[in-house]
Image (cartoon, rainbow, N blue to C red; front, side, top):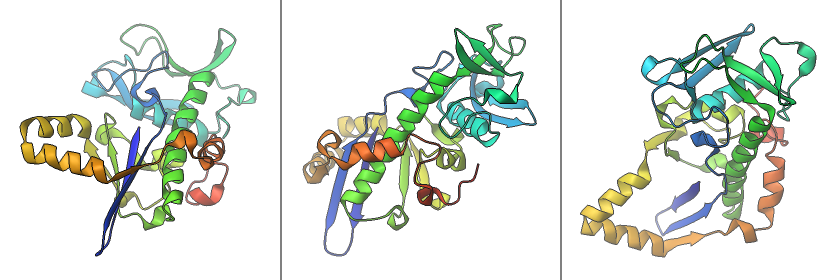
Length: 253
């Protein structure tokens, strides 16, 4: 995931960027039932009083879980204290939806009778752990970048979210798991698949291509593998929402 900040005042325009090694976890990769945001993907999930309700893309029977659904699932499991803030299942609850398969706890999000495949759609402890690592990498990259330029998240005007999440991403839940910073949700905006749109613009428009080249020349890249504070930030972010609770003062499990 690539991140950038555009810092503007009356005197100068300064742009900095970095790339976080978050992998494709929020595109459904690495999870047994993970899938892209296509028909049948569970995109919204809620757990209340032991019951799971969900919405799927195209109102079809569930075939798997896309990125926004995975975020919802982690938040709901933590909110209901089915998992701890370390992502581990609380087996003492004796929740009937928690099963052990191949010596690993899993939570049943949709029963075999509900799904298109006739198999239960589940999320496992190791899959939750991988998602926590991915969200930790994203947040650690943002925190490293904002610290590098001497700002705080509250000083940002806008955070743009690009890619396949779409409008189905629940921003408060994304904040609550520590994926996005705890700021005014009105400052967070979706811009769709910006990389594809940008590629089309630069291929079809000479001025757009020249502007892209100009932006690239002005951009200061922060190589996180050589930026020592990043690893400390990453380790601190491997928790729901974060080990530093002051960064997420609005979040309460």
